[in-house]
Picture 1 (cartoon, rainbow, N blue to C red):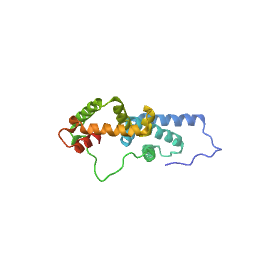
Picture 2: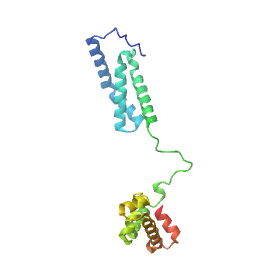
Picture 3: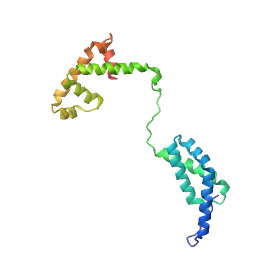
Picture 4: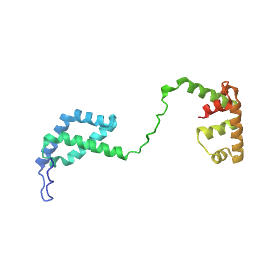
Length: 192
């Protein structure tokens, strides 16, 4: 399918270059929908498919003179797209890891329950003194450490620790948050 690249002493004439470019352009215009469909099926994303097809066309254009059987260009392009897609896939960071158990799906829980819990928790937080509320938000919503909170609020680390402990105790004792259950059960659900 590929023929050897002409030696450095051989140069193509201008008319050969123009003819090769015209043949490549005609092929791409004729087959672009089919090639795009292949790229889309490989990637599943419109923009990634466009990038993949562009890269494959660039590689094919560079090799156009070496392709002896122009009838096999479709297979060459598809193979190039597949190889480029696999290479890109291998370079990506893997964010999902297989596990023994499937995670809970959104349909498994009551959609409003999470919203209600969140609303009740924010109401309970609003009943805390401003400094305690600020510390809890910095710790559990922003993920700050005790020293960071102490620096932000310009207080000692010991004050942060004791204030957070008292705030959590007040939340555990809050009747609205308990819903008639024992403290450990109700508070554990809200913090989780």
